[in-house]
Image (cartoon, rainbow, N blue to C red; front, top):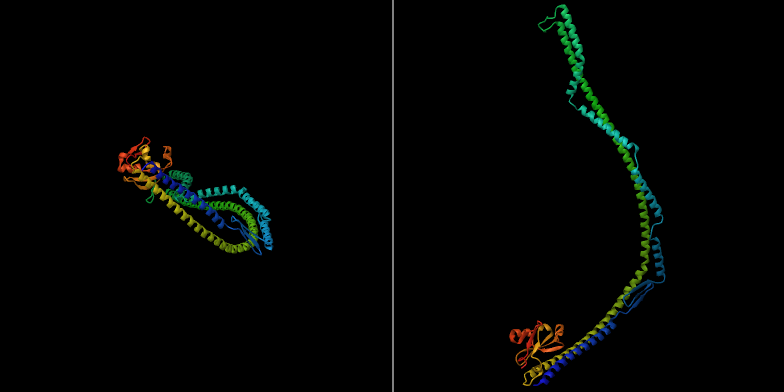
Length: 436
């Protein structure tokens, strides 16, 4: 075989690639024509539905226009006007709200008002309670100490008189010469005995008086403490009544103000209720028109489904035809490619110099530089032969288009002596002895 067989094989392969490309372009054109026709056949058709109360229209982009007609339109307009008239602030609401705010202002002023007698009443109540506490503490003291103090004062007052009586008796006894006389019952004279008894009785009386005086003082302190405590509590209650009265008046004013404001809210709520009722009534004609539209949509939808079904059947039939043509063209392209590869393989086994002997035996064959790699078959030397397209990285290294040959990474496993690592980092293959 000669170089011409190599060229013929490559020409067959190139024709196969061109035919596959033409098939792709033709298929794309047929698919676009089919898509445009299906789009036209299945697109939505606008329609309108009319009744005695209104008319509904659905546009080509799905826009919806529903409007009442005749008396229904007049009723809708009147009810909408009533609804809009009642939307807003209630009539008389400003006056009611103003009175309510004024009453609330009086309530706040009442709470902040000054009570002239409040501080004085509180002060007097505190003074009375303080004094009551002192008297009650005094009434609770041990009476013995107080009795002794009173007894000592009484005895202090009796001491001088008793001393004077004793001196007078001693002078009388001395003048009678009886100063040293004594009796069996008493160490002194009967006069001295009588004086001693009188002094003893005087001491006893002083003790009784001290006890009575201390008891009277305790009772008086208790009564005073109770009275002052009651007075202080009464004054404190009076001060509290003053505060309570002021708060009650403020609360009454506040409740009246809030009642007025609540009345304003009631007015506005009632007016909004009337507006809502009128607005809802205004949409009754719209609802009737929409009901008719729903029935129209049912029949229109059935027609639309039938139209889309017919378009779908046509599309399926057309796609089936395109697929058949594509499969036929792909078969023809594959057949040409296999024929070309066979011619190349046969040419490689001839004795004459072929295309590959005219070129350098060293070629880039790194799989990292290839894309769309397809197995063609084995040549007469048993090497796997592939066809591929050079990728963008290969284009940067000067390789373009498509090519046929072996894969460097595959030869590394079986014939590593035929693989060379180039300075650019990619494998190259020595094709001497591979083709023949």
